[in-house]
Amino acid sequence: MRLTVVSDAWTPQVNGVVRTLTTTVAQLQARGHVIQTITPDRFFSVPCPTYPEIRLALTTPRRVGVMIAEFHPEAVHIATEGPLGWLARNWCLKRGVPFTTSFHTRFPDYVAARTGLSPAWLWRWLVRFHGAARHILVATPRLAEELHGHGLAATRLWSRGVDLAQFNPGVPPPAAYAGLAHPIMLSVGRVAVEKNIASFLDAKVAGTKVVVGDGPALAAMRARYKDVVFLGSLQGAALAAAYAGADVFVFPSLTDTFGLVMIEALASGVPVAGFPIAGPLDVIGAEGSGVVPGFDARVGAVDDDLATAIAAALMTNRADCAAYAANFRWEVCVDQFLAGLADIEGPIDLTPV
Image 1 (cartoon, rainbow, N blue to C red):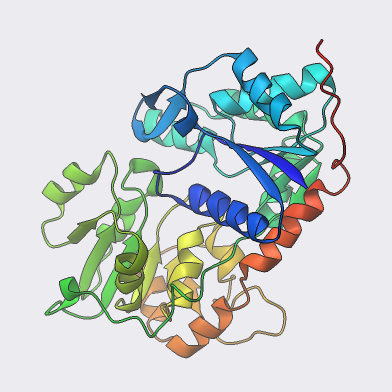
Image 2 (image 1 turned 120 degrees about the vertical axis):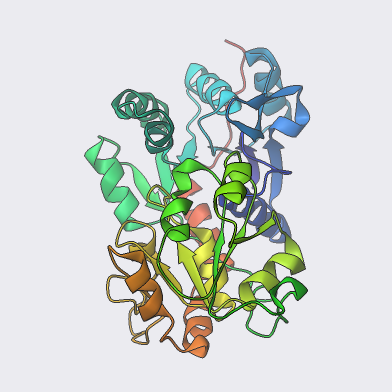
């Protein structure tokens, strides 16, 4: 299949959306599919206000349309609701070309966290964008139910996976952990207000708190929390070591749609602690024993009090965490992605209009 993937989130950004998209594209190519990516690195771009890691492509509808038309795709997937996503969406609608989208980020909740404004108006914008898609790919059934409540019913499941070769309990801990008081409590993600990291750093627990990630709140967090170890952004082997050397992974976010970092931690043999909301509930479940049928060992804990969740998660067997994470395979996720394209794949009419 010849597939066009349009995304405003792409390398060198480091986040779960980019890892999901780049891994999916790589696995599709390994299966023999021919993929065109229309991403900000192919255009002049400017940093997104308050989120400079995201580059906003500056281009024209004609250029995006020509790129798609000259590639002659059999299917089009629009991954994000940014400038490139809207241009591709409008091109497809103008020509009657069916396309799929994916819902990765709760932008309305992010805006509310940063500004205090109601997220309702941004939801209207998102509903308009995704409402034109043949299918909307979502990471969890819970997220599908949420979108249904906003009138977006055409959802298909596209779950998440983990690279078990990279993330596993056998990875040696990093040198930065030497001499730190245990338990070592790790959080990985963008250091920004919408990630609710302060609730983790304010939790009254013994041990050492470690934060991996970069973001607009990093300098302020470093100045405020002198006893926290901030390692900045890590990738590859360094990130895998940071996971494997921790005693518990703490996921304080209240706005994420899934939380890929949780299954990376579990694959590393590290239990997860979080709040009982979407994300943690979709990965470790209300009772902390996961969401995979037939799996009944504890892999973490959720609680309205994060310190309580951390204490419970620390009682978990690390081998059980790694065994549970083996259920999240990228091969299955790619199969789901292809299933979402199955009834739109075919020749696209590229006649000028």
